[in-house]
Length: 270
Image (cartoon, rainbow, N blue to C red; front, top):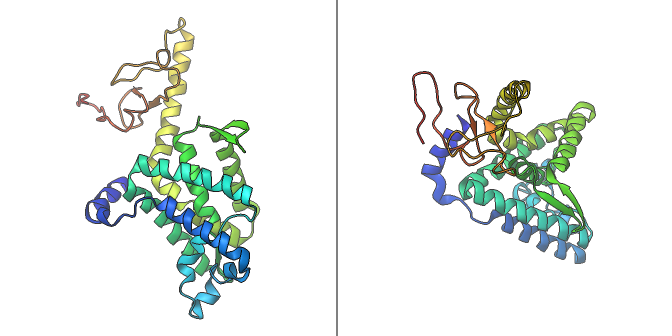
């Protein structure tokens, strides 16, 4: 449903999408980072403070997006390198319009949360954090070299992030709870369908594996219904089971999003 809404919006508004939005945000934050070294009051004048906005500082509704994260140059370089890599990857995967919408939804929900809170304040850290979570969800086995040295799969870092967000929602203050929920709204809207597929497909996958293990050793566990590749011929491929198809129909990462659902009385086509 949400995907169809995005498709309709893209048809009418796609021409207004801003390309390379990640680079624009990084450029703005780096510029503020440099300028604030000679003018310490600059950041205080651009952060999102609802009280200041109500007094007429309307520019804060936008300028808080350019508040730099961190104050050490080495940390800032590492952070912006990651943000650039992941943001541009998402834009290539979704297209410019959908990536714009992902950031826009996070931006608007963050502002709404700030105006609901008694002492409204907003930060761009959680918004940019959802870019990391989206990239990790789509590329769970991507190996990230922390500080260019320590290799770690990004899914584990994402898991730690979700645990931190979960603890913040459970035991944090109400402002923190609301800020976290608002910041991940874009992620939940964009990936609700994929999460459902993984949950339902994972259940079917476990049942299928149990049946296979109960019989003689199989030549493979997963085989794409469309292209027929298996987990033996392509061990790095991510196979999933479609929750909307009848039976335990498996698809590779390329075809899980690009196939016609097989239901009773309806044959498969691709």
